[in-house]
Image (cartoon, rainbow, N blue to C red; front, side, top):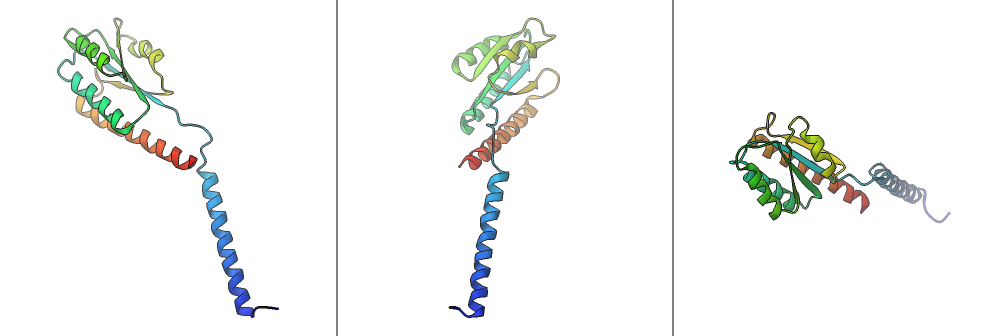
Length: 160
């Protein structure tokens, strides 16, 4: 025997310690492995008669998408507004490539008109007519985009 008993014990202990960390790293890699790509997202925003708020809201969502470099598209459904909302939306759609506008005459099924225009696999419907207030809209958009960014970070960490 070349080494003393205590030196042999230390070498075997270090080998087992190293084996433990290798197995732990392999297990972490295996459990966080993403086998599929997370889907892109789309927003459908249903609104009516919001000429005072619509420009700020659309610019907010466009800035959030650009700042976070998200792969998200926005489809805005105008449900027969009587004010300047359609004109403002058309102008914004020409300025922002991420924005698509649908003018829905029949307001019973506005989401059905917008679904074919969505590019994302996950569609978030935000109803500003009867469900959300403009302040709540901003909070919801920020939360959904933050979650999307977190999912993308997890995906890129698993790939790298």
